[in-house]
Length: 144
Figure 1 (spheres, rainbow, N blue to C red):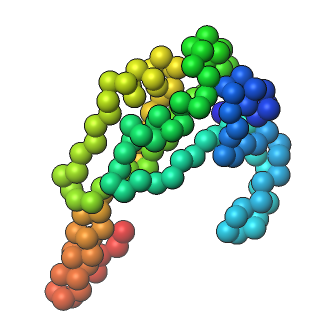
Figure 2 (figure 1 turned 30 degrees about the vertical axis):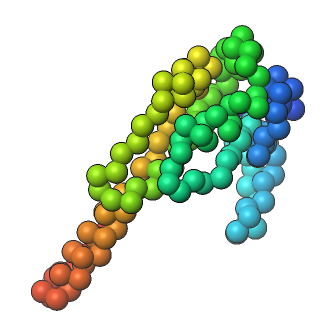
């Protein structure tokens, strides 16, 4: 991501096509709302399919393997633009875990790519529902 990011340049440098791209100032139409918004910065993004059970190592490889392996190109790109790998993790229980292989960590680190997690705990929703049910049976009111 970056204000002066040119998606065509990034595609050429990395040797791949994005799943989504935009230039600063582009008008973007929301898929659901159909509202028009103006892009506040440039973006070049690749998405891969969700996996259940999770396979973060496989998804990282699916994103990076088709792209250039030239670390000098990656160094140039990340020196000019913000590069991160965003992961949404949906946990099945309160004690689920996640591991990344040394190969995935090396692939991201050597390219200067930060990894960013949003972690969703399935138990939190269940606990909230149980608490609301208990409170309503006691005459109490809870708010989120």
